[in-house]
Image 1 (spheres, rainbow, N blue to C red):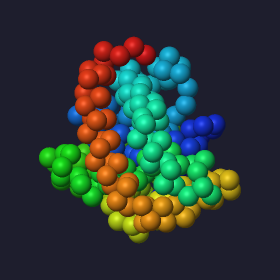
Image 2 (image 1 turned 90 degrees about the vertical axis):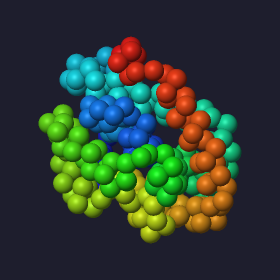
Image 3 (image 1 turned 45 degrees about the horizontal axis):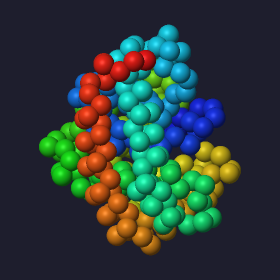
Image 4 (image 1 turned 90 degrees about the horizontal axis):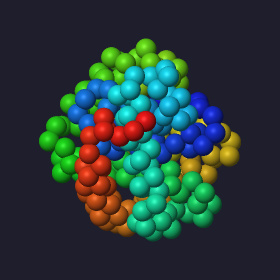
Length: 215
């Protein structure tokens, strides 16, 4: 699996792809936009000059979700279970762990089987491939073949994800062993997910339709 190479803080984008896709509206453009929040930078106005409006609205929603998550007291609490050697990356670790438990408890949050949902998401990406950043578009078939949206449910899959994120830059090396945090504090992370994710979903629903948001 390859990861997008983008400048600045987006190099440490949350990467909890599955959660963002589930929180998107049930439309291809929304799903693509909500995923692209981890692959693109720039203001909504600048992005609107080269991307369809519905895609940009999805990116805006992605960023709203990230801000809510980052500012939530439970996120700060869960970060304390990340080893001090990689505490600066604790937000990334927590976001990825949320996708681990979302995958493991998928049926509680989505009526579609996971493989059906991810197939729909992959189809949406293929439909919009012409506008995808090269880091995503060029590797899309490989990602789909690798079942990239279904990796999170096992410790082996999570270990692979942590290793690949660590390869992005030498300074990210501490993320490589983050599986140890999940394994050492599984009950705390799982309880945190069960408390946080339903609240996040209610908050997203209260925001209303993406089309009503300014860009």
